Image (cartoon, rainbow over all chains, first blue to last red; front, side, top):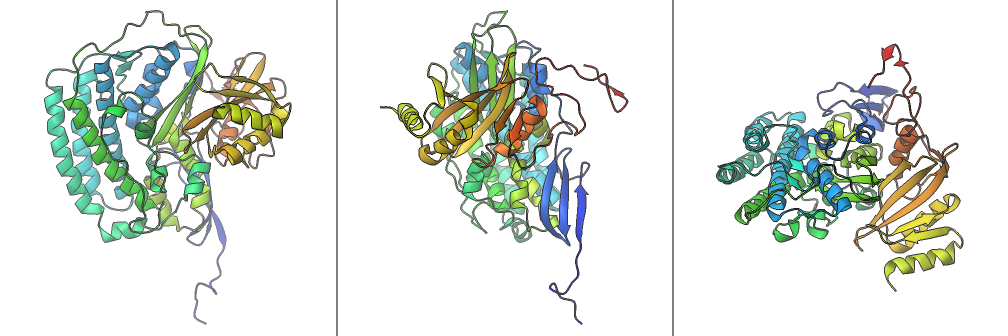
Length: 376
Length: 156
């Protein structure tokens, strides 16, 4: 008898993917129930990187906590810095000088660019294309140099302060950033030529792990992953914070160009296109950079009034939010980080059913999950 | 009548005596809801007022009680609404919101893990961030870690 798929005797198998697996982008363990190569169920086991940042926050003053926010998500530290400072400023009613707001936008968008470089590059690398990642990292180094010039750090920046930024831009920063924008645009075109239209790459991503609009909203998937499912929503455009209302940029939406709306390819494409938009925003912010102070007056012993605040920001992986409760003392009584990758992982069991085991790698990469952010 | 007044009126009609009080002076309007009926109110908000996502569900230990805080968001109306309910510290129990929003599944596992709140009817209420055999709920204000975990000293 010829063995076909219908006559083949298969047996269910439980398989551990991780905690140490090259494509899990950190320490993540997926417990898989497999039928042959087909995934029946996925149980993400998280918490390997839990550091209790929320608990630590309760024993530190508002200013002391800023370096910890870098560690919530190390690939987009500037964005988390920005979010936390905005939340505390909202709580205490502090006005940030205009120049500081512009500098913050420049920094967060540069950070978004290098975060998307890693996101897209790592996805390509997981699928076997090694070169784009290395090309991307060359550009990322240039941004790291810019950040190092500004605040002395290359990964955990601790640059923003409550009421502004720690120091003004160094001499030569603006020129170097303009130069970077030009090089980056060329290089991003080049990386795209290598993979975005590459038929093998497209076949690995198109129609894989489709996330519908209704599921995306119910699971509260945000950012590029939400837009890939066809929802026209970007916090920067629709509920602008900081000075985002002054810039002109487009919001790419998933249209299912090579497959279905909300598949892995759409999620990848959102990041590619968003990077161009971020380049546009940085250019506009540099053009309009006003003169002036970079730090508002904030008392040494900082005590915000009693109350609570919930602040959201559009981070590279989606909307991150911080919830702070203040009892009027120097330390917050509760800090909660709501992180986008946590929600992204929550949807895995729903959308990975029926996918091939090898496609799971593409799903993890396409959601651009960063584990320290999930575990906090 | 603005939308929040409409919401309050509707809840008073559908679920009388559930709404304890509303607060409008903060960043977002807050509805304080009685613990036993919080999930029906959330379902009403989702179905009739377009709050199609639960952005955040978290808890806070206020010393004498545990506050449970839901942050709801409606994309078409660009509106945020906060729903709060109060749980006892000794035996914190509340119905799960998992059937209303899928995202609540993991949020509630996290709250169970870090605060020890029991969500009745939850499909998979196990610890999510900490090891399954961890003792205690760290985000409670009176939490003291055990001296050691499997022979490893816990110091901080």
